[in-house]
Length: 586
Ligand code: GLC
Image (cartoon, rainbow, N blue to C red; front, top):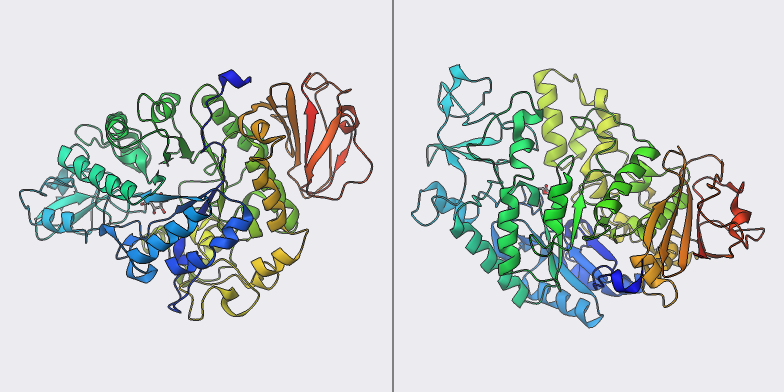
């Protein structure tokens, strides 16, 4: 890669920190995090060195899906504070040269949004804002619903992503409406130009308030295939096939790009389908088309997922590598990708892709990976502390609809006998693992709240907490600071951000070695993904053994100097050891 070939963008050079406000920091003692709680921690974020905050939804919402069911896009949820608090947060971040992006939830609204309230009354202006359909004769189809008039089945056989039919019956309008997520999240009818206008206006409103971009929630589902076809042979009766990456999504986003977006904004598209075809990835990222800055795809976080949350899944390192390698290839010429292993929809990365036995080492190794792959690293709150999954013991401890619904339904159907039978899988996979509060101290409620926390606090707060981590120079937190500072480093910044990626060990079960190359300089990254020792196995032709190697970063104390690449051959890496060397490319 040479200078003239790269497209420099501020958001490629940035590190994004994701805040799930409910679980970040509570200042008013109601057990739920709030905006003043984030303001209180702005210096913490600044010390960590991050560049952008992505705020999960803070809009007014009845909280059927923790804010992803918006009832007013221009107001702040009471529990989180008010617009003045949001403004203060925006000011506090911008004063410290940090930017702020908002979650844009526009595949659906809450059923309590005024648009829906008027739509269900068939108001002339809002009647077609949602997907209203007549039911069908239940005798003629293979799907049913527990609701609706006798003898009637939903308009098609689609299934909700959160379990059960994707249609709910509305008594007022006497018709069915589509909801790909919870029944309190009716899908907006994007084919209706008035819907699109209303969304663009709302986006403009936030841009005028000074936001630096958006994370576009569930964007792959905006388009729905003509006729809403059911495919009984497909998973979820064809829901994802016909309402995931449907070509219409690119028409809508191209229009949004022309009307509202610009390359100066950070726009992160969440594409949650199990795979993203090449042509869709290119369309989302092409500046002349949808023009999104980068994608959050799910392909790597799906490698250990079966059809349901209660089926245990396995992953292997070669699979993880092959997915992330594919995305590097897809975005080699154009486009960009968000690098993440955890967020509010995923378990904690240490417990899932690392090792709780080697918590500290593996947290650092996973961080090394995310910060030295090509793409923008996303740090999810608590990741910088090496937070782990919660020790769930009963179904009632979970708050998440996407955890409770499918398990309760499976028990009702008799597919699963009791929670105990599936506890291990559910505990490992639930989104609530990522939603337990940030552990600030080892004190009561981990310093998160003075009240009763809305969800359990991990008992490992005794050792895993921000106060202890900041005192300890060897902590995950200090290591993350170093990782975060790499992108703005005078010497290696360009290499870390723009360097070309090359995989050297695609098949190895526990070793991942790769290089990043930019203008005659190279990084060599060696990671041991195992609780055991692994001997480095470096392809002899990949890098010249005589070349000088300078250690840039490592998660263990290194004894015995490595001064040339050749010294790395046959070196034994300790459990979850990560090393980054700076070497010459020629
Ligand atoms: C996205 C969000 C998730 C939410 C869903 C519905 O996947 O990340 O938390 O439940 O969209 O809005």
